[in-house]
Length: 243
Image (cartoon, rainbow, N blue to C red; front, side, top):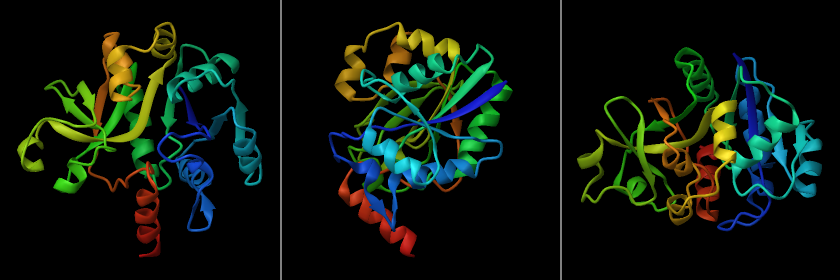
């Protein structure tokens, strides 16, 4: 199995415009993501972007960059464009590391790569436990319902109704911004338009469930920091780095 590691990155985030180039303890968010992926054994990460500003900034830390068109509506579509451009074959599995996860744990990325290889999975992602009500009720945090076969049932930003996160901890988990795809799964996703479920929740992975593409779930208990969706997230991670 040929493994590729791609970081899709755009400049115009709706909730935090320009966040990819926002500084976190002296380095841009996208540089920190890239450097985390570089720590994964055997990884040669690619930054996929349509932005001249991002490409110019990434060239300064010698990142490998693949330019895409401006048509992709999400990271999955941007990665599919890269896969087609670079003519990756059916033996390839692609690990998607979101460009707003500056403290993503390299070991979790490596674990997902191993998991994809061992299961020969068409699509997979990573979850972890919730540890507080604040974390669970945060609307910027995606929740995943998981069945007895360790596959995703649903993704949402609200999650099941409860008074305390411990009520749902055996079947609902926090999503980590990592995906693995086969080229077959990427092609199937690209052949379909966004579904209403995906548009409503603003979660691209729901298109896979809509198309009956199983999403295998890897549960991790390794340290998993939050991504950057808002300025408050950036300040939180600044404090984490400082400590």
